[in-house]
Image 1: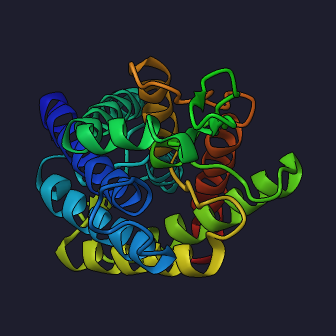
Image 2: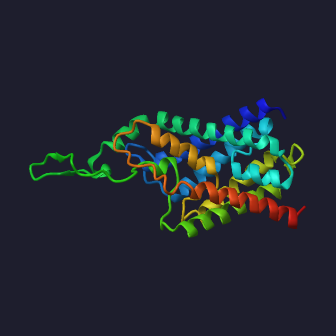
Image 3: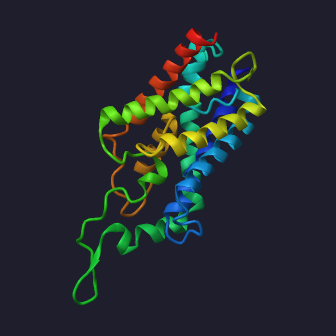
Length: 263
């Protein structure tokens, strides 16, 4: 496949992945959304369908990696040339940022309603009934739409969780029948991978929100930091290394384990 195929497939596929995945998080989180408070099941299945759609779109042009951890795992396994890895990763990051911007565009009114609501941003009424604008807003009231965060902040536990969850994902991909000489997932593989992502979300997503994909977290986190959202809070850059390092290590371990046990 050509460099242009990789760029187009990974950019579009990852953009759609983040649009639909971030979209379900926005739908469940934001005020004035018809799906608000739909819960964890909606989020896990929404992300599964996001993976399915993105993989179908990108499967032909680029092999539908959509995830640097998958790309690294495939490179170690031998299905992807190391020379193509930077192009894959750059295209995925660009696509993730585009997808996050599209989520903001789709839910523009809901973002405004949510982030200007006194109950959401932490302001409070005074005795005279006026809103006290000096009250500090809660940190990151919409950050979870864009990126992941732990329920218990423990760097070692959090990164181990991401390593294990990502290793399961990448190993499940590598052990499928791969198209393009082992360079990506086929049509049936896209469905299987989507179901694996749902399973990971249900079983392993509780501690950290299961990033299992560095650009899924990094791209939208960058967009969150740049968007002109009122009262949005911080972007939690102190945690950002976990959903980058954990998935990359997990993908590399899966590639090595595949070569040892399945090749």
